[in-house]
Amino acid sequence: MSTHTNNETAVAVKKEKKTGLFYRILGSIGRWLMTIVWWPTKIFYKEKFPQDKPVICICNHYAIEDACAIYHQLFGFKGRIVVKSEAMDDSFVGNFLTALCNAISVRRGESDIKAIKEMMKELLAGGKILIFPEGTRNKSKNYKELLPFKEGPVTIAIKTKSVIVPTLYYKPLRPFGFRKNRLIVGDPIDLSAYYGKQLHDVKDEASQLVFDKMLELRNQLDDIMENYGGDPKKYEQAKKEIAAKDEKTLSSEGGKVEEK
Image 1 (cartoon, helix red, strand yellow):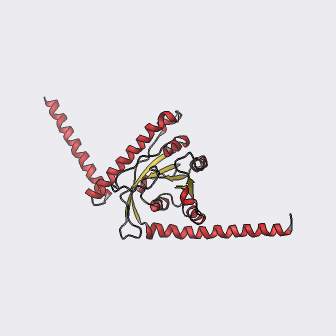
Image 2 (cartoon, helix red, strand yellow):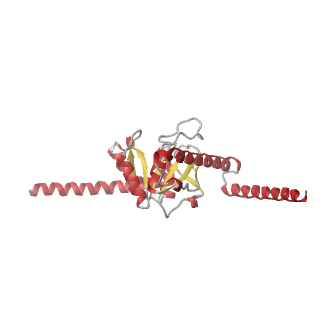
């Protein structure tokens, strides 16, 4: 190989390293701006999110910024975010998203083997990924509505024996707003009952289970925001009081039955 060729290769490597450093710096600035200035979010029940096991985090989807709070406050800037391939087509945007949230590009509407392998590799190494199971942004006027879920998260969770953690935003808000959005974290969903079974036999049932859990989370968050002033502590206290009252009523009815 000629000296001229060696010099060209060295320049190319040097340039690539500079470009990588540029996007890493840009990604660091972008994470700070998005999570604190652009898309501030308060998270309810953050303690429910597991940090010691592989996790597929799912969330409803209003805007491209939805990943910010999750990747910052729940993932701790570790793990990977699944994004549509169209967002990665532009080299600048693609490099920025990779630096911002270690994005995995997936082609919608088809079986993207490369993307699936990347997700499974992350999970089998004990990592975390964020997937929006609706597959697209929800632009419905009824922001509380959930679009039908894709089967990908459930399929990958069963294959890698990972838990699914449901999270949900209360409503779409404009960036740079003065109000914080609200994100609720639900209980991890264990799909171990489906391990070792044929996927085509169980994926519909498992997907419906996950969808139902998200609907329950939707109702819980609505209740907290609309009936308890956005205070989960008041919500939990009210639940305890209702449970105590019900237990007292049952005990009282049981005593009356014994007297008869």
